[in-house]
Amino acid sequence: MRKLALLTALAIIGLSCHDSYHLPEVKGPPLSVPGAGKKAVEEGPLKVVYVSPRGKTPNRHVQVTVTFNKPVVPLAQVEKRAKVAPLVIEPAVPGKQRWLSSRTLSFTPDKPLFGSRSYRLKVKAGLEAVDGSKLDADKSWSFETVRLKVTRAYVPYNARRWASPRQKLNLYFNQPVDPQRAQSLLSFVAKPRQGQ
Image (cartoon, rainbow, N blue to C red):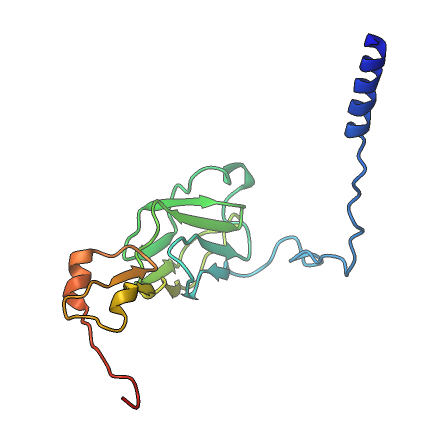
């Protein structure tokens, strides 16, 4: 009886370890690798080829990324924190700059950025690449964090039709708000329905 139980357990374990799931075949064109087919070392001055974010961002959790056309730090130093912080952000934001690769610099804020605010960023001219070429001119851009908006307003059911001037109204915003400041800026206006 024990042998039968042992054999059954071994059979179940053996079957459960068998990989019966197969991934579907990948279809479509082959992936293109940026820079493939180009010369290994690009000639000319150092240039910024990609920046992110720019324009309006959908939230306050942002990671800034700057990519150059050629290596700026040797591969041996990529994992180290940026010794010289080439990225300038105004207004100043506490955070860490680090190299994701020899060409790509990233900045991660210590805390989510303030909402409803514009940030100006700049990589100053004179930044030197590994090959000795330099950034000819400042590279500047900006982005704006998500604007403050009411995501939900709650009025108690019994007050929807017969609200009084002292009626409480709960407002929910898409980011933290100082209640005292909000109260000083908000007003309640009752409008009659059209046709009444």
